[in-house]
Length: 273
Length: 295
Image 1 (cartoon, rainbow over the protein chains, first blue to last red):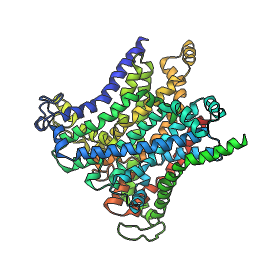
Image 2: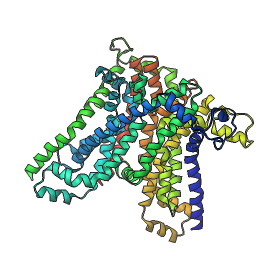
Image 3: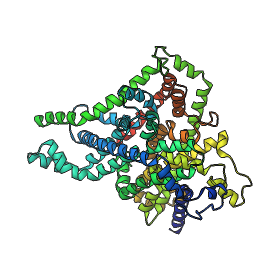
Image 4: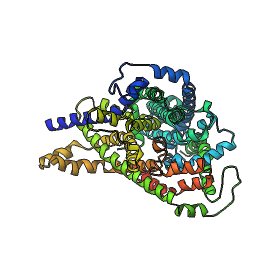
């Protein structure tokens, strides 16, 4: 018992350090002045502490605009994904129709198709639709990975709900849609919220499609904007750190809020132990 | 029963139709276009002409592409291997944690939800050769363990090491959480029986824990292999494939050829070389995932 506890303590400390040190290093640098970094004067904590990088980022760069673009894209993608994945997940988990097994396998296969395979032809398709260089190109293309993933998660959720409730509603004369909306949807709410958060996070963090489909600096999302900051101005590293902190905080906040659902969703949907 | 089932099919068709439109229009159709493009000589601004297997033959004899295949394999095998080992360690630690287990599980998952671009940036700075910026150089020099800064990212081996570390750091929490779930579903009686038989901690791990998580290990390895061999973000942001071609992998090379050299057809062909491998990986994975789905 004591050996196990010692192992646990050493292990927890080691993993906490591995996870937290890089986060701390970035946050730490974001609060330092240029001189502090340049002359390596205060390595471990920012002394004196400054918000200068944050104000410069907010006022001197297009970061607020990129943040807005990321938010608009993520919200639109999340809404689209939630509707499509809930309907699809419900149909595959609960309705009996010919080819159901095939559709279920197809969803899994699509979830595994990497974006690296599709970005060049998708660029051509979106260019022909006249959607490149606008957020529409992202709102159209992100569901190609969020929808298969969220549908796959929700199939698991819908399958786990008791059949009797739905049958009772059907016997009472409710139609399929009413049974879905009034009986199953409230029960599946945790799963749907978890899948919506996944869709939001995937969209918020996406880089490759945004890099390829958008050249106009006013239509960039945060990840591509950050990438521009790195290779743009040599002196803007402090702002880059500040931007990293600002971008990470909302996702972490969302995640802390629904951590339990998210981990369970992960365990239920993608890798059932 | 029959009318209900007929109604089921109608509803299913209705509910699945948005998904079908998305899948056909933005996944299947572009994929077919990709296959077609790989048989042409498409350059940006010129109409394409059918050239048969020329792109494939070109790449098969291209030293740059050979380096890409080598780098991708090193990057993928090293990252996935490290993720399995660290993931197992993380799960073992959390499995014997007697308090606040959910808190630590959540804490350790943080890298997995962070944007890969930010992770790539972070590790670029961690390994930076400039003492005030690079974590390792700052700390090692401050502790007197290093006299002059190391330029890790400037060497071929160092750059590969750095991208592997960044990819590993992002990925191991997912492995750990999956293995933990599997470990917690192993019946305690098995451990008790093993203890009664006088099995040591190591033997219990080898004969009870490991068989209990084997299935999940296979699934995570296959999943992560597919994602890692197609990774773009970490390599592109950290090294742009450099120095030279030392960290150029499939996705970054495909981007480089298509969008910097403007050879779209050849760029597409680079990623199509991965399709057979992906098909094999996906087929294996579907078997594992769908089997437990039906069980």
